[in-house]
Image 1 (cartoon, helix red, strand yellow):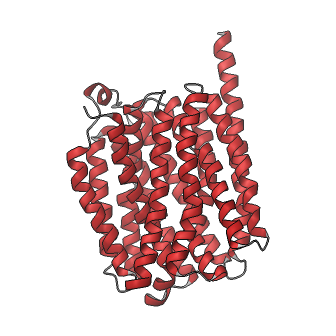
Image 2 (cartoon, rainbow, N blue to C red):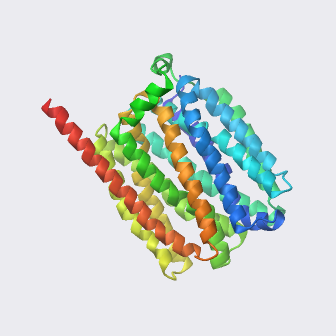
Length: 404
């Protein structure tokens, strides 16, 4: 069997492209607004439709990944979403692009539940948070690469070549993955549970810490998706950057910090917490409480460099805490239910994220993006308090178990 680190390296590449394809469109909004006659609400709807279809498909994607071959799902999802991305370069009307964004959500939602569950099977408590953190760092790198490449190609050749390039890269990667990506061992695959859907859902939602993780993840998703959707446009409108520069600035600072935070946070979590779930929740909650107030920089007329440094720090601290999210979920749920649980969480995250993007699109003509970004500080801190409440629940259960 190939090394668990080889598996991780493949998932870093595939996951990075997953996030590149979903977020690169934000760097092309100024061109799409002209080329397809998109309004602010139309741009917001384009982002929201992807998230809502992703949300609708995610619970089913999780269930499928718990019942069928996860390796095949990863490769099939990669090939399908890459084809949809390439086809996006052929559209001639806004409704066609929006329809393809719906299909992009349905094809991409198959990836994360299967990929995270496979990573958790190959990596035990000693390296699980490290592996998931590095994978999360790959997602962040994909956002930077996708936004920058799309902006660069958009400045030189228009918006269509960006979709062709990203889609073509995914199809090539799917072929490579079909040769290199192993499946779980037979013993690991046997642990998947062949139970009814109702039994799986009841077991998942009766787990108190899963409800905690579901709540904090939805709160964090609101801020994440507002940033990823509107930050490049903010740098274009407020600071007058070119498309390539805005695509880079709108992703690099936040996601470079996110990359460092996810990787380092995962490694620190494995060493500080190990199998102690309450310690992971402590790290997560504290990180969110520290990261939230940094977003208040948008409430003042700060220089571009200051905003960039602050965004980097926010992304790093927040992602260091977020690196504990999936390990906590894997700690409290058995292997056969993890993909379903992740699918439900993805559905919640993308539904709330899509709603937040659409609401912010309606508010944008009357409230500038700086105010919207600054308000995110409250949401991030609320997520931190939810994590600390979850730690209290975990400590209480541990105390009861010790007395029994």
